[in-house]
Amino acid sequence: MQVSAKLTDASRTIKASFFFLNRLEFPRPDVGSKVRLIGTHLQQWKQGGLQLCGKNIQFGESIVPMSLSNAITAWGIVKAAGAQRCFPQLAITAIVIAWGHADTCRGSDMHLSAEFRDFDNVNCTIRGSFFFDPSKCPRSFDPGDVVQLVGVDIQEWNGLPQLFGRNVLITGVHK
Image 1: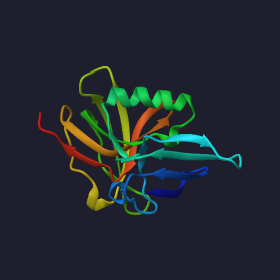
Image 2: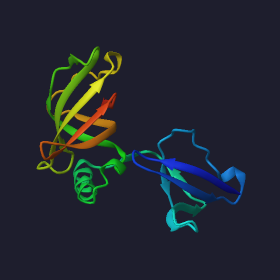
Image 3: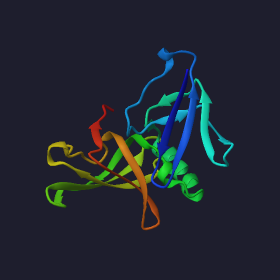
Image 4: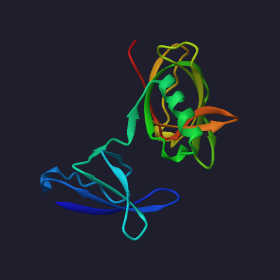
């Protein structure tokens, strides 16, 4: 079975053609879904354009679990290549260094800042800046608490990587 699609990111649209052995193997994502395509390659199309293609490709989760130190290293590589917008959302387990107070901003949104360190590497720290609907704002955490951040992004702030996101799921993890 052949499946054709148009895929877009912030700056371009590309046509795609994927082949599956049967209809049952095709995991149909919803229009507008953010997915990770595993097993694809880029080829030159007859008319001179590029096309994404593959056989029995897999759709991965758009949130990738990663350690904090690996995320910072990967961000540096992606940033050097100029591909920051292709960096996936992450699920990270980290230790709280400092936890700010949630303040109202932008209408009714809550803003929260925090600082984290890697679970295994005490020298790896990063700040975070998060925005929440008031009903989704996480409880307060103390320094030393282990938390999991799901759906977090990385951006550059004042020359350094920073965690950020909207309605990021932040939950405590038992030590």
